Length: 136
Image (cartoon, rainbow, N blue to C red; front, side, top):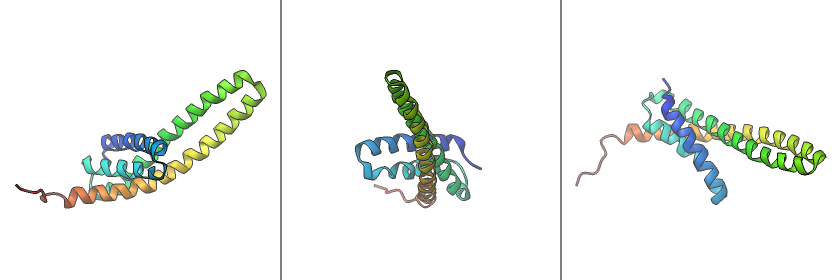
């Protein structure tokens, strides 16, 4: 059964890391969904067979969060343009909505694939890492 608390935490970590890494270090943006899926399955109490689904869910939900933030951010910009130039504002708003939906779908798909990979890695670390602590 899917551990929804862990999926929620993984989704938020996915969204935050993806946004920060996209802004700061663009080529590393793909680490956000991988780490989100890894974290969700590592800290979660779900079965090993659910790791792929949990990781994919973190990617989908994280991608949805990123898409909503993208649409909201550019929606505010379109509203400001609309106040200044009425006809350009309508065009900018429509373009923002179309681009936002497209980017949201792409980010959700990419996040699902990378989150699933992270989920499998996380459950393998959890399963194989037990009992391998270093004793001093």
